[in-house]
Image (cartoon, rainbow, N blue to C red; front, side):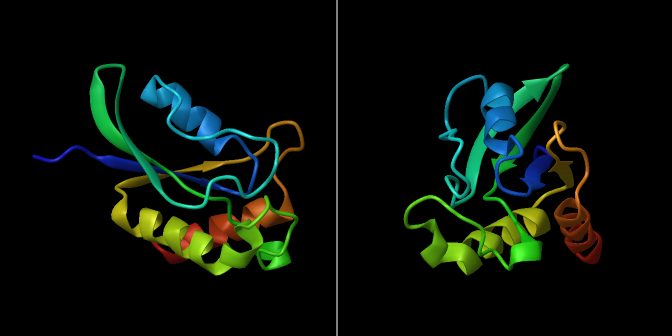
Length: 121
């Protein structure tokens, strides 16, 4: 039986890569304050409370700006590919964890990302 897969999804810079690294137990994903640092899916195996599963870190989805928010150097050229990679992770996963920025609360773009997830159920 294969392990469950959990995708970490949300807007840019809500802490997906930080949580991914914490769950993985090592620094596999680059963490930076600049949105758009994560472009491709990043995979790791992890164990939490005795449960083994695979996790996927994804690039941020910002539907309100059509992905045109300020991104890291070079990422703006790959907006559609970054979103496609996130959607592939959503489809490939058994569960999706939607992350939001706790310092600002749930925003309209967070709700739009949640709606994208609902459409992929």
